[in-house]
Image (cartoon, rainbow, N blue to C red):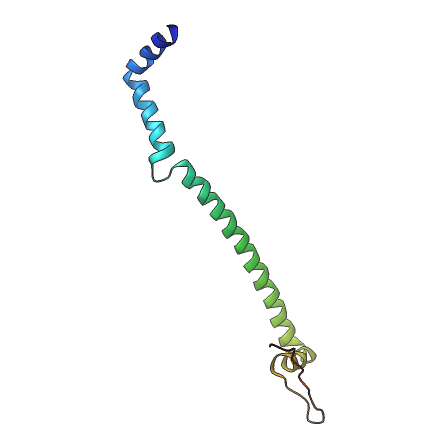
Amino acid sequence: MRFLSFLRTYLGNKYILASTAFVVWLLFFDRNDVLTQFERQGELEELQESKQYYADQIKQERQSLEELRSNPITIEKYARERYGMKRDNEDVFIIQKAGE
């Protein structure tokens, strides 16, 4: 009985009713509701991890480029491995595994 009286008092108050409806609207029906915010937070974390991965890759590639620019032995190694180049007095045999 006391609960019904308490409930009637608060449901009859238009400010509490409007505030409750506003909060429910923001939590569940708005374009930026709680579930959407959690999804966006997950996407943000994934993008930050991806950004860190690509920043590390760029750093590694810049180091490799600097090594290629400054060291002739590295240039030769890269040309041999990547393009199959050889010196005039040697033979190169490329062995591939079955299915490649």
